[in-house]
Amino acid sequence: ILKKRVITAVLGSSLLIFCIIEVDTVIFTSFISIACAVAGYEMTSVTGIKNKIMTVLSIVFGALTPFIICHSLWLNVNKTMLFICAFFIYLTLMTLLLFKNTLSVKFSSVAVTVFGTVFFSFCLTQGVIIGNANKYISSDFTRTEGIYLIVFAFCVSWLTDTFAYLVGIKFGKH
Image 1 (cartoon, rainbow, N blue to C red):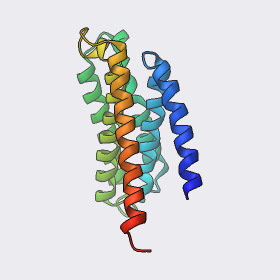
Image 2 (image 1 turned 30 degrees about the vertical axis):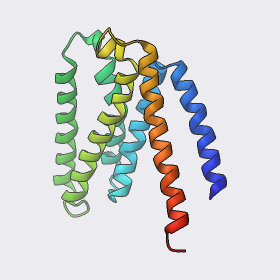
Image 3 (image 1 turned 90 degrees about the horizontal axis):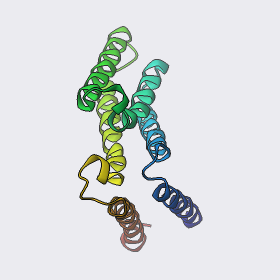
Image 4 (image 1 turned 180 degrees about the vertical axis):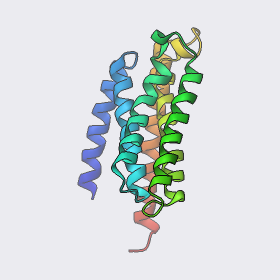
């Protein structure tokens, strides 16, 4: 299991370095978009939804969220309203599919999937906003400060995971 963790750390570190280099480009947003799409897929998988259309809807909504929130300037519309409209379209389609498949899909599974997909996609998209704090938050921030914040988030995540693993080995039941 340690070998798998080392491989994951090396791949994660490589991805982090690449993201730091490309933090202010659409490439970084694309990586976040892929992570959001995976989150949408995982939510349907974890809740046991076997409906392919619901799965595709969750993946598409997750993948589009970073672009809607961060790269919708060319549409000349309010980004918040665009995200809310996309959310309500997603929610409406999932609800219609729920009513169509009431025997095979539980309401609680759809509710958890919709909430989880929206929650994780929105939270991951904040990485793009933080990384580009000088563009999205305030011009007082520099690109370097945004990169530091992203590195800090990765480091905190990895350190808490590592220490949880070590505490589990030391004090957990074997």
